[in-house]
Amino acid sequence: MARYKAVVSYDGSSYGGWQKQLNTTSIQEVIEQALAKMHKHDVAIVASGRTDAGVHAIAQVFHFDSEMKIQEKHWIKALNSLLPKDIRIQSVKQVTEAFHARFDAIGKRYDYLISNDILNPFKENYMAKDAHKLDVAYMQECATVLIGTHDFTSFTSNKIDPRKPRVKTITRLEVLQEKDHVHMIFEGNGFLRYMVRMLSQTLIEAGKHRITKADIKKMLEAKDKHACRYKAVPQGLYLVRVDYADDEEQN
Amino acid sequence: MARYKAVVSYDGSSYGGWQKQLNTTSIQEVIEQALAKMHKHDVAIVASGRTDAGVHAIAQVFHFDSEMKIQEKHWIKALNSLLPKDIRIQSVKQVTEAFHARFDAIGKRYDYLISNDILNPFKENYMAKDAHKLDVAYMQECATVLIGTHDFTSFTSNKIDPRKPRVKTITRLEVLQEKDHVHMIFEGNGFLRYMVRMLSQTLIEAGKHRITKADIKKMLEAKDKHACRYKAVPQGLYLVRVDYADDEEQN
Image (tube, rainbow over all chains, first blue to last red; front, side, top):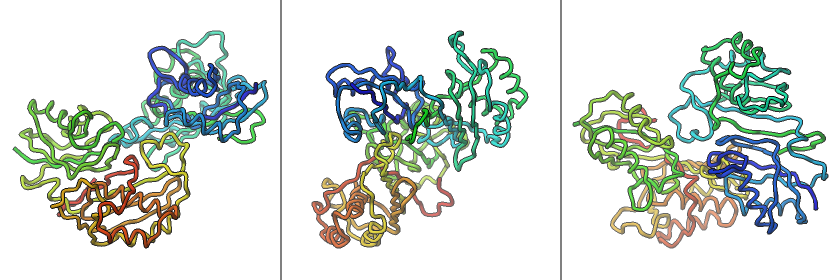
C-alpha cells in the first residue's frame, strides 16, 4: 500500500462542486468512480479543500492510497481515459504515508476573473461579467487593507463552525487590468468558505466606486458575519495552486 | 414591415449546428423562438450559411423581417434577455428590403485553433487538441498551394449537390504559432461544406510531416471527392466574419 499525491485540473461548469453530495454530480465522486474502476474496489480521495459549484481548478491537489504499482505516466493515462474530458489529471506522485492533502497544505492561490465584454458567449462559464469599467488602480489600493493577517469573520459564510479559527494571512492580493478582463490574484496560508468570492465582489464594488477603502476597513474590523453582503459568482473563480512544505515543483 | 440584419456570436458546444433539424436543438430554432416570443407570431431567419454541430461563431449574420419598430439597443436587449447565454446578439440594424444574408455575402473568415496542451480541460470544446508539435512554417508553406482560385471538389462533403459550383477563391490562409496554440486563418469568397475543416486537418497532417506539399497539390488537382480523407473536429472552428458589399463596419 502506498500513498499518492495527485494534481487535477477541472472545468467546474457542469459539476455541483468538489464535495460529494446528493442530487448533483461532484468532481470527487467522478474521480473516485474512475479509481474504483481501476482498483475493482472503492478508493477514497482527500482534497486540499472543497471548491463550490461552478468553480474551476487549474491545480487542485488530492491524495489516495493504493496497492497498485504503476508508473506516473501510466497513472495519468489510465485515470484520464476513465474520466470525462473536463477533468484532467496532471500528475500522480508517490509520497510518504504521512502526507495529507488538506492538513499539510501551507498555502493556496486563487484567481478571480471579471470580463467587461458582456456580449461574449464564450466567457459565460469562465469569468464573472460586469458592464461597468472597473477602477483597477482603486481596487488595488483597497486591496492593501486586506493584505496581512486578519480575522476574516466578516468575509465568510454564516454557516461557519464557530470553533474554527477565522484568522488568515493574505500574502499577495493583486488586481491587474488584462487585455479583455480584470484579473485578481489571492495568495495566502488558507481561505475560509466563500472568502475569496466575498473579497472579490467587495473589491469589484470598490472598483465601481460604490464603496470606499474606509468602508472595506470598517467591514474587516467589524468581524461580523453580516458586515459583508457581497459574493462574486462562482464561474470567475479558479483554484490555481496548493503549496506544501518541501514541494519542489507544482503544476 | 422592415428587414433587419443581425450579427450573432455563439458558443456552438451545446447545439446540433445552425440549421433546424430533428432530434437536436439548433441555433436557428432557438433564435426563431426568441423572435416568436417578441412578435407573438413566427418569424423566419436566414443566415449567411450553416455551421455544423459544435462549431462556434464570433459573428454569424442573419436577416429577418419585422413589423416592430424598435431601436437597435432595445432589439439587442430584448433578444438577449430571451436567448440562452451561449447565444448573444451583437447588433441589429435595419437594411433595405433587398438585403439577403446568404446571397449578398461576398466573403467570409473562418479561424481554426489547435492546442498542444492536451491535459487542459478548459479547451475541450474550444480547440482541437493534438499531442504533436506542429511544424507551423511547413504548414504555412503548404498553404500557398491552396491560396487562390481553385476547384475544391477534393475538399468537401461527398453529399455535395453536383450542380453547385465548387470553384472558390481563398484570399488569405495564414498559419500562426500563438503562445499556447496554432491558429489558422481562412479568408475567401465562400467555402464549401466541410471545406475549412478538411483543409485544416490536411494542413495539420502536413504539420506532422505525414504528408507533403506535393501530396496536397495532388489532392487539390484530383478534383475528386475521395482524394482527401481528413476532416478536423468541429470544436476548433470559428466563423469569425461575414462580409457584404458596402459594409462600413462589421462586428
